[in-house]
Image (cartoon, rainbow, N blue to C red; front, side, top):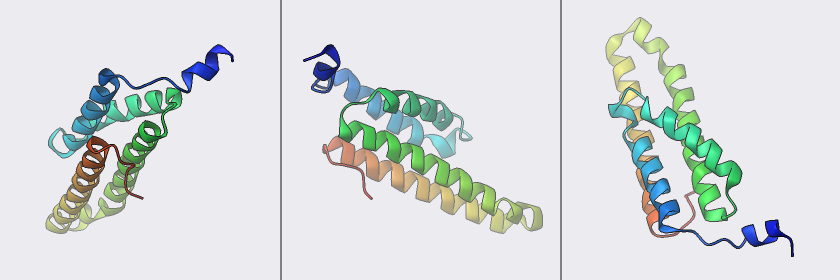
Length: 119
Protein backbone atom coordinates (compact mmCIF):
# COMPACT_ATOMS: atom_id res chain seq x y z
CA UNK A 1 0.00 0.00 0.00
CA UNK A 2 1.21 3.45 -0.75
CA UNK A 3 1.22 6.32 1.70
CA UNK A 4 -1.89 7.86 0.13
CA UNK A 5 -3.87 4.66 0.75
CA UNK A 6 -3.39 5.08 4.49
CA UNK A 7 -4.68 8.65 4.33
CA UNK A 8 -8.10 7.35 3.27
CA UNK A 9 -8.38 5.45 6.56
CA UNK A 10 -7.27 8.34 8.72
CA UNK A 11 -9.52 8.71 11.73
CA UNK A 12 -10.97 12.04 12.69
CA UNK A 13 -9.59 13.81 15.71
CA UNK A 14 -11.56 15.90 18.19
CA UNK A 15 -9.87 18.90 16.57
CA UNK A 16 -11.49 18.06 13.23
CA UNK A 17 -14.90 17.96 14.90
CA UNK A 18 -14.17 21.26 16.62
CA UNK A 19 -13.34 22.89 13.27
CA UNK A 20 -16.68 21.74 11.86
CA UNK A 21 -18.55 23.08 14.89
CA UNK A 22 -16.75 26.42 14.57
CA UNK A 23 -17.60 26.59 10.87
CA UNK A 24 -21.26 25.94 11.59
CA UNK A 25 -21.16 28.60 14.34
CA UNK A 26 -19.67 31.12 11.91
CA UNK A 27 -22.43 30.36 9.42
CA UNK A 28 -25.11 30.70 12.09
CA UNK A 29 -23.71 34.11 13.04
CA UNK A 30 -24.17 35.32 9.44
CA UNK A 31 -27.26 37.52 9.75
CA UNK A 32 -25.85 39.16 12.87
CA UNK A 33 -22.46 40.05 11.35
CA UNK A 34 -23.56 41.60 8.04
CA UNK A 35 -22.64 38.30 6.32
CA UNK A 36 -18.90 38.81 7.02
CA UNK A 37 -18.19 35.70 9.13
CA UNK A 38 -19.77 33.23 6.71
CA UNK A 39 -17.44 34.49 3.98
CA UNK A 40 -14.52 33.48 6.20
CA UNK A 41 -16.22 30.14 6.90
CA UNK A 42 -16.91 29.65 3.19
CA UNK A 43 -13.21 29.99 2.36
CA UNK A 44 -12.32 27.46 5.06
CA UNK A 45 -15.09 25.14 3.79
CA UNK A 46 -13.62 25.17 0.29
CA UNK A 47 -10.09 24.54 1.58
CA UNK A 48 -11.08 21.76 3.99
CA UNK A 49 -13.43 20.07 1.50
CA UNK A 50 -10.61 19.75 -1.03
CA UNK A 51 -8.52 17.76 1.48
CA UNK A 52 -11.37 15.79 3.05
CA UNK A 53 -11.35 12.00 2.85
CA UNK A 54 -14.28 11.35 5.18
CA UNK A 55 -17.61 11.45 3.27
CA UNK A 56 -19.50 12.75 6.32
CA UNK A 57 -17.24 15.77 6.64
CA UNK A 58 -17.07 16.37 2.88
CA UNK A 59 -20.87 16.34 2.60
CA UNK A 60 -21.23 18.79 5.48
CA UNK A 61 -18.70 21.14 3.86
CA UNK A 62 -20.65 20.95 0.60
CA UNK A 63 -23.91 21.52 2.47
CA UNK A 64 -22.58 24.71 4.08
CA UNK A 65 -21.22 25.93 0.74
CA UNK A 66 -24.56 25.30 -1.02
CA UNK A 67 -26.49 27.00 1.77
CA UNK A 68 -24.29 30.08 1.53
CA UNK A 69 -24.55 30.44 -2.25
CA UNK A 70 -28.30 29.84 -2.34
CA UNK A 71 -28.71 32.54 0.28
CA UNK A 72 -26.60 34.96 -1.73
CA UNK A 73 -28.73 34.21 -4.79
CA UNK A 74 -31.97 34.87 -2.91
CA UNK A 75 -30.59 38.06 -1.38
CA UNK A 76 -29.69 39.31 -4.87
CA UNK A 77 -33.03 38.30 -6.35
CA UNK A 78 -34.97 40.09 -3.60
CA UNK A 79 -32.74 43.20 -3.49
CA UNK A 80 -34.86 45.11 -6.05
CA UNK A 81 -37.62 45.15 -3.45
CA UNK A 82 -35.49 47.62 -1.48
CA UNK A 83 -35.39 49.95 -4.47
CA UNK A 84 -39.16 49.93 -4.83
CA UNK A 85 -40.25 49.58 -1.24
CA UNK A 86 -38.24 49.29 1.96
CA UNK A 87 -40.67 47.15 3.96
CA UNK A 88 -41.10 44.30 1.42
CA UNK A 89 -37.33 44.18 0.95
CA UNK A 90 -36.77 43.93 4.68
CA UNK A 91 -39.40 41.20 4.95
CA UNK A 92 -37.83 39.25 2.06
CA UNK A 93 -34.33 39.51 3.55
CA UNK A 94 -35.66 38.46 6.95
CA UNK A 95 -37.21 35.37 5.37
CA UNK A 96 -33.90 34.56 3.64
CA UNK A 97 -32.02 35.01 6.94
CA UNK A 98 -34.47 32.72 8.76
CA UNK A 99 -34.15 30.09 6.01
CA UNK A 100 -30.35 30.35 6.20
CA UNK A 101 -30.37 29.95 9.99
CA UNK A 102 -32.76 27.01 9.73
CA UNK A 103 -30.51 25.18 7.24
CA UNK A 104 -27.35 25.87 9.23
CA UNK A 105 -28.83 24.81 12.55
CA UNK A 106 -30.42 21.72 11.00
CA UNK A 107 -27.10 20.71 9.41
CA UNK A 108 -25.23 21.44 12.64
CA UNK A 109 -27.57 19.21 14.65
CA UNK A 110 -27.22 16.40 12.12
CA UNK A 111 -23.43 16.73 12.23
CA UNK A 112 -23.52 16.57 16.03
CA UNK A 113 -25.42 13.27 15.69
CA UNK A 114 -22.89 11.95 13.10
CA UNK A 115 -25.51 11.97 10.37
CA UNK A 116 -25.25 13.17 6.80
CA UNK A 117 -26.74 16.60 6.10
CA UNK A 118 -30.30 16.73 4.84
CA UNK A 119 -30.82 16.40 1.10
